[in-house]
Image 1: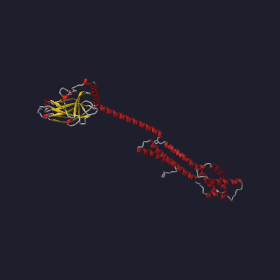
Image 2: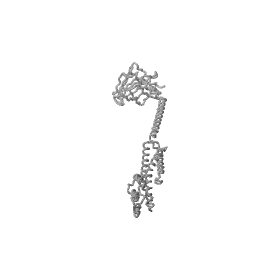
Image 3: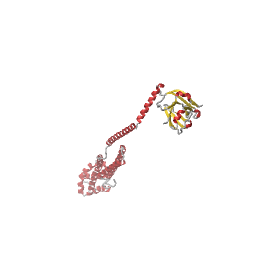
Image 4: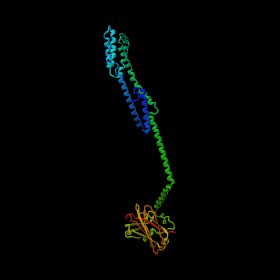
Length: 400
């Protein structure tokens, strides 16, 4: 603004419009999309423009309120007419008019709006006394008074011109294509917000559909359904009691049954272990309780010698059908001693509230057939004496 013509209203309007366009461009470059922030920045710019316009109005008002004639010139005018002296009442009238004209600018407050009502009163006196003063030879005061009138007539025009400049600047602001009204901006942003939310929902639904399709095609749905059906089937068999109990439990004829619940008397129990026949949820079973995780808590099941001869130099599978007798899981350890064939490592299983099959393999390289029975040793005291297990059967599938 300092480098341009501040007094020209057109120049100021162009500078204001350039500032508005620069503000809009700067906000777009910075990625500012918040309507409240944009309106605050625009309001700050408009407040600054109004402040500059107010300064210009005050500056023009100060120039307009300053007297055009020097104080000496106003006093000299009447003194130069004193030698002639007034001859009548009519001749005295011209003396008071110019005096009022010279005194009014200095006596009035320095505000342009208070000068306007003086012009009609000064005008008639000036028009009627210009000629006598010219005839009397006093041209200089007359010209000075005329100059004062010209200056006073221009002051209201300068003051009244500023609101027009402001009005023109407001019209220019509203006519700018980049300066959109806040309501229109809010409406366009609401429309864009709705479209973005709709697109987000569509993408989310597509991703969920793809995940469901992958979950179904991977076979996980079928496996979950199959497990649920099996659990329902087991629950139905349990509710039916022992009449639905299958002694073979789905095993084929190739499996040799080493132990069944009716053989509870054949078990060899340690000093801190117990074995008793009970009616479990899945049929007859033997409850095994061990108070010691060592040898005193062992329960021994004998394996016939003829079955050991079938297992010689082969890999065989041993299956134990067990279930937890409490409302929580129980730990069970299994190891074996098959005489001349050798021993198997210790295995550890977790019995749950549902009946399950605990399977493990044994391999023997020796071909020497044992002459005495082997042993399968169980211990249910790994986690204490309060977690017994139910043993339904022990089977062996000899290798081929």
